[in-house]
Image (cartoon, rainbow, N blue to C red; front, top):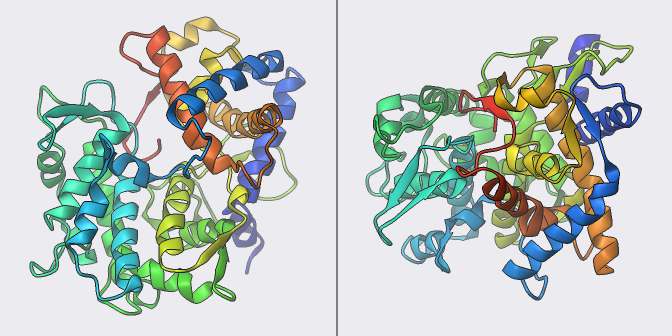
Length: 411
């Protein structure tokens, strides 16, 4: 393995995300960042706001993990479980593969929807936007077999169906029209086609007990379990290694595509990773979302706090709207920023580090520890929901405080 390849692999982990985000925070606290200053004195009031949001949704503080599965619950009805009751999977592993199929494609379609798009839920007659709307749209496509290559087995996602997926098929499934525009449709469709191609070409991982399908990753991870247990950071590592090539061409090292990693001049190192900030938002969102399928199949998932907070606009918006993060130039809030811009890279990296700090304050206030209140529950309780509430209080359309140009494949 060459030096550049080894350096690339060193960035494909939750530990790398956490370490470099903490370095970014230290630079911010030393007043060495070009775009943001930090006021940690407001973490206390931010924590109180997050606790209030959490208690309203979960009065007993019995909070589930932050994952895609929460978005399949509408008006108290778990739409996926309704499907599962009629699926007649032959065993726990078959259900696990189907849940992996759904989680993977639903998460990969979960980049920001924009402020104008919504999904008409035919069961309730409600129009549902944002992440919840994207979740229902992907679930409905899954439920009617739109991504299956076998009409007799609709509740699955096949590599063959993904490889041929067109942007128009996605527009149809997500009810996209000129009056109901969805950000990044072409990018989302291209991402799923790339996934289909990769799965088809890697039968050793994705077709151990079935024809090639994303859900074949269930068998791969189960095979890595030691005494029926697997650590959450290992789940992420496998996702980054096995699915990394599907992401649009951005930064590569030693011919290894790095995915959600971006350049920033302050992140200096003595090796080939100099100037690179890893974030891996969608992959970590997916790692969180694969925990429950593994648990339902009888596996134990350990070290869940080894994953980091998610570098996305609701968590990031929480800190900006709460005054913890402040733009040096307030006019930047009115401009559009590329996801690769130094400002957005700073914002996202600082978000990860601040989530760790905020989690510590919340646990102290509630007299709980990381075991009883892991980060996955704080995110769900939690920071994501509070970020959305603050956005709605401050801006009529509920948009994030910083405008990011999205291609539908980042966050």
